[in-house]
Image 1 (tube, rainbow, N blue to C red):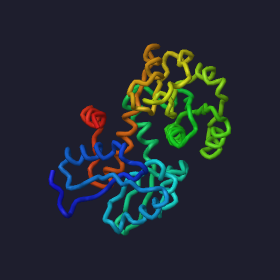
Image 2: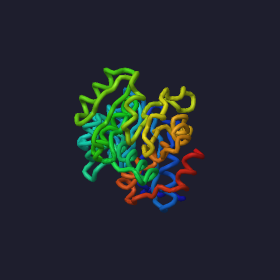
Image 3: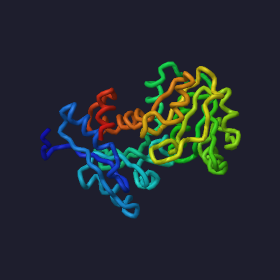
Image 4: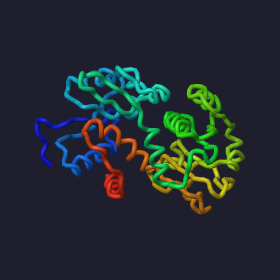
Length: 279
């Protein structure tokens, strides 16, 4: 597709950024919808992140995605911060408004819930408690999204209790912290189990948690998507439980930014999954 001098420009900022699948994702949408636009990787070292973000309007960018390690810096660099991004303490999507103002939001939670609803249509937030494994940035986004969706109680399980307690305190709401040694005991009354750690990812050990104690109707999801079927999901599937892989979270979290920058609400479908996985 030809790109003109009037092309809309967006990108993804990180360090490193060469591993990101976002350019392939957005590039597919741009081609599918015949949009005169481009989405580029922006490799920016941590000490230049704020400077680079503030320069987006001058460079003619419509905005950008922000990935590690710049999400917290982006929250401090934008002019306007969406309430959800403020609660998460991190920004993953920046939109340059008509007057050059930088608006920061976080769509990770949106992507997580949309993926969960698509992969497990029978799941309802009110079904019961959710157990979230991990207490990093990804866990924070998931916990906020689950509470906003109406989950009655979130149980945080992490190897370091202090980190989980800090997250629970920051987020507020019905969030309880359980020691790692009790991780399988709390599964007995759980409607949803979420792994937000890198355990189970290619090159990492599997998550040390057996889903056998989960009720028969429970849903298990993993934000890891390399591989799509992590050891946790495989064990849950062997039990006959509904499982949801992590790829859809990446795809759905990209929708709000694309719509804001390029003016089209994009579709997430099997063709997009295939294209992104091939990248």
